[in-house]
Image (cartoon, rainbow, N blue to C red):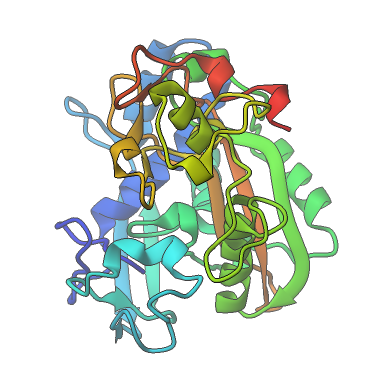
Length: 344
């Protein structure tokens, strides 16, 4: 677990799981699941305030965190995590050594009191949070992943039917919701990728991280085979920047056959582009008018009732980048620069 306290990136040594943080996560997952049933933002906000509270309305749902145990720090790098290991895909903000992580194994009791009319709303949010979310920071890369036997599938053999059944039970609409998409609000998507082989929690976590790293960097897939130095990337962003700025090292002439664009923007922003030996090309990409866009891909270990875990990737809809700003490039880039069949 990374962060989770009142100060960003810092764990609360006395109460690492705070009721205020839990409420915030449950509110997010309620909106991403049960919130898809509303046709207007006004109706969505009214129901959300009734359940979780608002600036002008007290919450009818009481959240209490009790009996926290197993609180133990994990200094990073160290304690089994290599400074340049696969875990850096999730916890690289902690690599400065300023903040410790909480070691896996923390347990706590959560008590919820709610109105009977909100029962399905609260239990749906809790089900989604426990299985797809987490506590603290970097939860979209598997940090702070949770497990509760009562909300877990029996095993990985029938995961698809279990998931379909739960979506129906809680009335979750999983097609992209225009109203939420127009506001940039995420909703639980229809796409779930998973590795059915059951392993321990840390093993399942790293499986998901390896999948993402391989997709972005694996030799002979995402980049050419290299020698002492990594091979050249097969993604189009670097050559798009070289062609736009008419620069670059002579040995790195742009591939004119490669389509121009920034497809990795769909996986989260900002992206920092650094060119070794071509520093004049260094630049950053942002969503237009903003500084960041959280990744719509959630990687995490998912617990089964038998105590084993699998690696799962969950996709959120509604947060697609519509326009992209790249420093040093003139004008904003449209959707075609991010999602284009030519990139395949």
